[in-house]
Image (cartoon, rainbow, N blue to C red):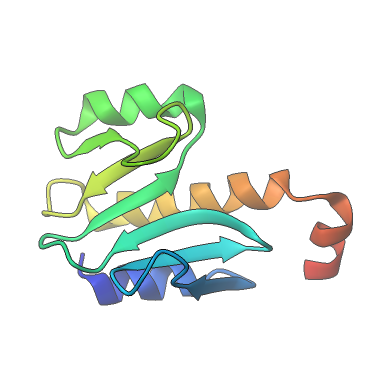
Length: 116
């Protein structure tokens, strides 16, 4: 996957937004005010940090060499995926959706209701 296809996949999710609070080299994707993905723009191949269910973190790391602990993130709840093609794009898209759902479910009820 490319930087552009990852961005498209993240922004295709309802109410997902992007910003760059950490500088021009990192895109941050949010639902509500909470992060679900971070995409490094200065890496080739691209690297993507994703929120992850703690029970799946180790499983994903064991399944793929290019999946590691979340870079600069809580290692129990985040993974970093190097998008060199070894993880199928369909899996990356599913993981993006999982990260989004996980974070959306953690939002306060009022925020979830406002999002519809």
